[in-house]
Length: 228
Image (tube, rainbow, N blue to C red):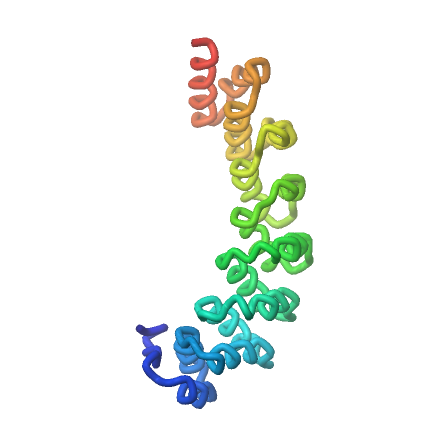
């Protein structure tokens, strides 16, 4: 096993690995990786202590490696604390780790980060929505349709498309059906097809005249089924 061409010293014992942490950054990374495959308290506690290192890069590496440790669950509170880290690199690593490890109790804090001021953190937290979404998040996701962050704004139709239900789909539909965004209009079409009543689906006649060929084709197919 190697990371960026540097062998991971996975066969070294924990004490030997700890002694190697003072090497250069490339060595630090592979040593932390090796520690993450150990199963003893010392390896675990060493990685947890690194979450408070002065070097944000080392804190980030520790977050990423802890998710592989067999004692990960004991580190959840420590990793959640990293959601308040002064470095966006560490916060983003913590978000990804908590989401990947399905730590549901981190949901509310990650939602709060979507509404924060750091754009890179907002993006990471928003993209995590796909994996942590709860029905109560729908209005927040929809409110970001006009967000100043282009990456977030462009992703909203997709998030809406996979999280809408029969209770809330109208909210998204009325916003997106006349959008300048072709993907948003196509999502509106698909929401209409999935949740709309026969009366609602009369709107497919409008979509069948859309300037976008994919939308026209989808709408005409839906109309043919409607009047079959």
